[in-house]
Length: 588
Image (cartoon, rainbow, N blue to C red; front, side, top):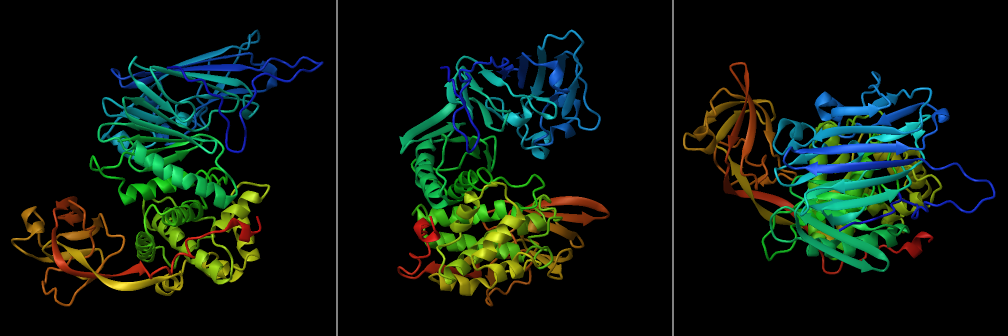
């Protein structure tokens, strides 16, 4: 099946490829034709490019392959068999740019070919560069921005009609954010620079589509397992119109969600998102964690799409943390998951933020903060602290009689400049009664308000709930890391896998987001790790040093009773007002 699509970026309509009639003939528009062939036998993508009609006098010419996913760190192996005519050489100042040197009699035609290897799932390359193209022997997935060279002239993307043809085995399903789903081949055409979309090749395990109120929904699934696409479609149809109505900015292109086992987590792109395939029973719905992830990625079309964050990622705490909060709020407001689930997620985010070493030390508004530190203290504070900061801002707005936090997103979208800036956020907060909030919690080292009173104010009540503890059979010297093992239960899980007295524990994973308390009736002396590890983890990993060597010890914890935590539930009808947002009350 051949799909022909004219694609446009956020905020633009379909682009006419034929100019309007004029008395002065316009110069011909350059054309760039691409071919991308999926070769599963060789585990690679073979790419060709042919550009015509380029005016050599219009400025210096470069081929650019964006370093998204840091492909330049992989080295020359990422771009195999690269041939360019006229010749091009890598720019020593930027390995992703290739200046072209046309001869004096050049006819304006450029050709290039290259091969991109697919990293095997589980390989070192896949683990360290998760955004590069990958495969599992059957399926393949990647992104356009680090797959297709684009042409730049005079420092800007070449104004050209770009046509891309995808090909694979005759029975292969091809799915892209530009053209949707097809079999065997697909072709798309547009007049804008190469932007970022997901690219998938393999076998479709499910496809669900709908056309509702002028919005097209396309949900495709790759990989084995029960077809989750009808459930994902239901979530998307519930959330996307709500996001659009509350922001004052309806979604203006097809909603494409591609499910694949090759990409854990989710990635939102310029046209569509790719999300890891959820584990689920054949007759069940979607796990709550997957609904949360999907809601988060879909909301990025607004906060991260229509509102564009800075390239330096100085606003990770806002475009990730506030996206997470507003996704949680909308999931509850749409009735997909209840208020109690919402409260549990906020409590967990608050606990994780306060447990970060960056809490109370790092300032959200500081442009010098390196938020992406590999799930370290700053990233934890940015994502989790940003989530609870958004909750507190929402509560404060409602306390002052404002409709709620969606007013911030709607207000920024109404501005002429759709780029996210700290000045724009500050100005909106100051003009909407949050000047003191901004000064205390955004412009100073993160010190969040007290959570219990804020949850109670919007209609929740607390109660005690039992929680399991993760027993390892370890007694340690001191409560904080690093610490030394001083005793082991000889029949405990840690002793059975080789932990030793004297091992110095440096780190533990996976940790609990919201650790429970330990009840007074838990009398065991082997208390290390009881409330540290996620109770659902099959393996608790300890990073230790022993005799000068670093080791990782994987322990299967034994779940025991005796934990407790303070949880929250909605009082009868008390949270209904909190989960409403009326754009009309917000001046629209």
